[in-house]
Length: 451
Image 1 (tube, rainbow, N blue to C red):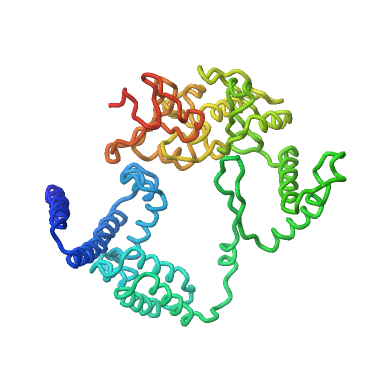
Image 2: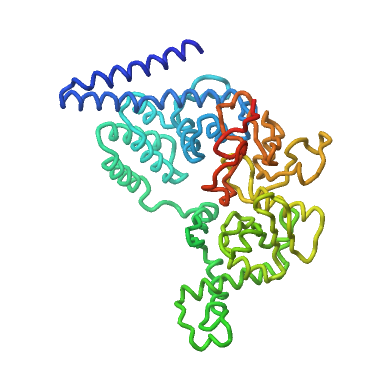
């Protein structure tokens, strides 16, 4: 490892030398330096591919303290999940491989890998080639794929990404002018619905592409629920000035509300499927601010007051200063359900730093001692963890504990300890922009008691 560290240190030193030398170069020489630097930087991922290929081949992520390779990279390198996925996919397609019997094999995209290692292709070029391979139909044979990869690698080595994209589109058209009829499985991947990120006014966008069956259901529902005058007070129906889009919105809201009220959705993680909202006494008294739902959405207090009038939902009120429970409203109050509602109010989502999974999709986790280790199912020892993080605890070196403010801290195993935060503040927007009390733990600093 000393030799590797020394080599990396030399790279840093040489970069400093280049930065200093650039001050005395002519404009033409500066352009030449940029070209040479670009070639070197483009070839650097080849080293990463080899490193990741060896890790993937020789060990498992749980041996390093995580449940997946993507989590290993996001934790150790502090990169996004999307970037981790991209790097892993690049390593699988461009990194060295080994057969089952152990002999070395060429990369899946052999020509592209070679051109990248020589510094001829940048990430933009590789992304275009990756999209080309993804669009190739499954019936295209191995030799044709290799020939196409070689042509794109050669073309990209002398052209910019825009020009390479045009060549890739033309080549794809030549290989698959019509193509076979897609399978039912391939068709299913085309359909999706996505709820966008919540905006400042609390609203969200809905986008998607639905199949014919879903369209038929939607048309039948909207024929009634989005008709003029539908879902309006009796005295307002005569003057309905809503657009069709507004009526669609109100119709969808009414159908979802009645579906929840019907009780036919069963239970989820120990609670009936319904709306769970938590807020503070101070917010309610002001009649302003926001509450937080079990799905992570922010709900303006006036909307919460209207929502709370319906007995089909859970409302949990606590003191914003002390955290003391003040009110738990629901017709039925079971002990295990009440504990879970407290977790919705206190944790609101997965407590692992960086995790954005809201409470609806979380499980109750023993923060200090697990049940099998004689832990107690007391509310002060319980915390929220999403399914993957909860399962990850079972077979890795990660541990959890409660700090002096009853916040859950996640302690990484030694191999992944790189100074990460230990408390997750994502699910508590009410703490944003507030001054920290002396000794207070937060998601932006490690606990002062940390070893």
